[in-house]
Length: 122
Image 1 (cartoon, rainbow, N blue to C red):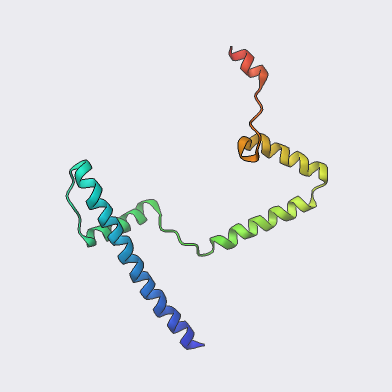
Image 2 (tube, rainbow, N blue to C red):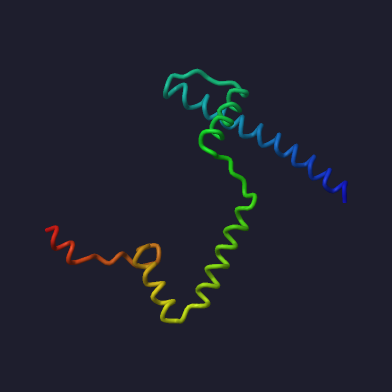
């Protein structure tokens, strides 16, 4: 069992190094291909590209992995299913109608127009 975790740790290390190489080369390539011609800035090195990635992580909180996120969404989905199951058919139809009104075309219907407000505006 201990060998499994050692192998997994080594595999994670090499995947991390590989991802850093790929993302660093991607940032460097895109920067050097686009920004010098458009903005007149200097080309950057690979280490500068890694620095930009780190800076963007600090400033914008990007690069979020899927650790734990899937479970949270699954729990919310299960809670919503339980809530819908406990509703009466009338409550369920009222709930669906309210969401169709709020979301409009995404539910297949356009938002109903408020005739009083549209006539008052004219």
